[in-house]
Every structure is written in C-alpha cells, then in structure tokens.
Image (cartoon, rainbow, N blue to C red; front, side, top):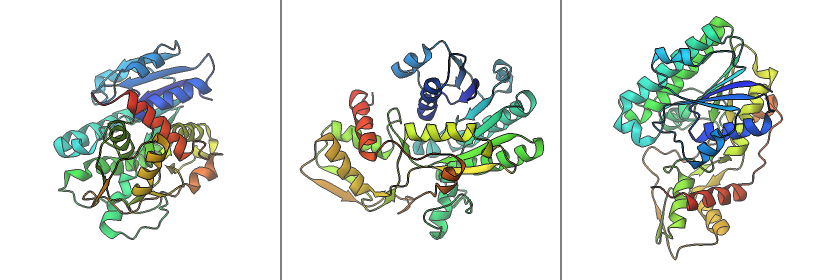
Length: 333
C-alpha cells in the first residue's frame, strides 16, 4: 500500500471517507495530506476527529493559484484529485466559476504532477454526468452503460451542463497528459455514491431529512425513474484497490465506472427508507420527474470487477439506515 498520499478536495464527502479508509488500511508510517479551499468542504466535528490523527496533514489552498503548489511538496505515491465545484444550483448561479475552477485546478495539478511527482500515480474523479448528455440527447445508450460511450454536452448554452463539460474535457486532459508524459494515472466515474456527509441536495439525504422531520404529505419526483446507489465505504474501497493495482498502470490509461449493481426505482427506494426508519407518512404525493432527469441510469461496473477483486459489502438497507441516522443527528443548519 502507498505510504505517502495526497487528496485534493479532502474535506468533502468522498475525500473524508477516502481518508478514513486509507487511515484504517494504512500502517503507522502512512502520511496523508488533505488539500481543500473550504468553499464547499468543511472542518466539522467529523473532520476534526479525523485530523487529530498524527499521520494527517491539512492544507487550505486554492488550487487555481499556481503559487500555492510549492506548498504541496513532492514524493507522493498516490494523488487523488477529487477537488471540483459541484452542485446543480451552482451550475446555474456561477457557471463561469464551475468551468474556471474545475478546469484550471486539473491543469495545474497535472503540470505540478508531471514536473514534481512523476513517479507517483494520479487518480481523477470524473462523473457519470460526462455521458448523461448522450442519454438526454439520444436516449439510446446501452443499459448497463459501459465506459466507452459517447460523451456529449447536450446544449452548450445551458449552464446545467457546465460541470459535465469540465469532466468531459478533464478526461481528455488525463488521457493525453498521461500519454505524452508517460504518467501512471486513471479516471474513475462515480455513480451515485451516498452515505453520511453527502451534502443536503441529493435524493437520499433529502429523503432522510424529510423523514426525520416527519414530512406529511411526502412528495416524490419521478417515482418510476431508476438508479443504482453505492455506499461510500464500498466506493472508496474500490478507489483504493484501483490505485493499488498494477493493472491500472497501463497506457492508454483506464476509465473505470464505480457503482453498485442493484437498480432500484425512486418509489421503491423511498419505500425501503420508510421500512428501515420505521416511519411512513399518511400520504405520498407522486410528481413528475425533475426537468433534465433521465428515466434510467445504470453504469456497467464489469471493468472494475475485472481489474480488482471488489464487490459491494454494505447492503442497501444497511447503508440507508446508517445514512438516515447521520442526517437525523446532523440536520441542515
């Protein structure tokens, strides 16, 4: 296992849980550096507990400022570049900043990596949003959807697609930088990771908060739409296994979907949440899907299972209950 690791976006959802996983799996000589600008990530009680570990180091840096890269140092075995501006509301409010921050931070990270840390290995988190435009535009992609599908921006004038655009161009930067400079690197596309500290806007946090508030009638949008949901502990374990595997040291670099196999409708997901929490409303109001939402999204994770020995360990029921319990104790302030 790697001994010296850097995680950007380290105070965010994935960064926090990835850090926990690496600390638990690593030995006493592990050194883990987290970088975050704290615009969206936060140093809450969970993070403070994590940072109390003497193997941890935290740097508050703006990765769009080239001057800060001297503070990173070098000698990292693994670099996880998770930092990005995300959140649908931000796509509409500050689309220019979504584009600027996500693209510049990746370019500067790659430049630093190939100059100062070339012997290490670099992971970039893309998104299933990178191919969501193809689903919306053509509605003809195979289900389950493999990695090698067209990446499409449905409408360049619609700010909704700014984040997806940065992930699309980010994948190209990764592929061609790695090819040019012979870097060990890979791309992962997360598919609906969920769990504690996942923010407050996604479907499972929203269901959790509204159940905790005893919202009645209980509204649900797009009850027949289907997704898969991967508990965050399983997700970060997959990321760690991929980085440790020599199978992902190849050129051209690998792009790998990470997600679960269990497809479930939003209506059935809500029913499971009622069951695991032991509460249900007197009435449920079924409403149309949110505009721009696709009816079905299911990533093919067979490549992940070919590359590493991985399968989900946390059942959906257990993951939902653990997530609900966290949000019940940590309602949005």
